[in-house]
Image (cartoon, rainbow, N blue to C red; front, side, top):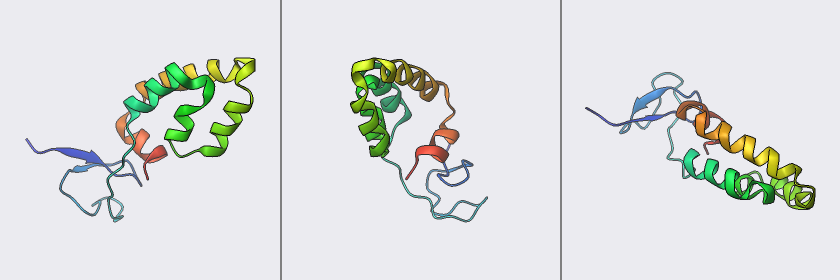
Length: 98
């Protein structure tokens, strides 16, 4: 059975060796972001916004840091962590892939 991956543009499931997505025609690049890592960071360090920095959203990460004393980012980070972990791989790639 061949390995598969997901297109970062359209989220389609494609062969791992494919360089171009057959559905949308975009060149497929490897992403260095893992939804498991993002989810665990959000669950454990969400109040500091570490998961936002990991996903390349530095502005939101700084906002989390500025308001970390209110514990509101911790609650939001916990919810986001659960959302990342239950999100499909294709949807995660579509939203947070490079």
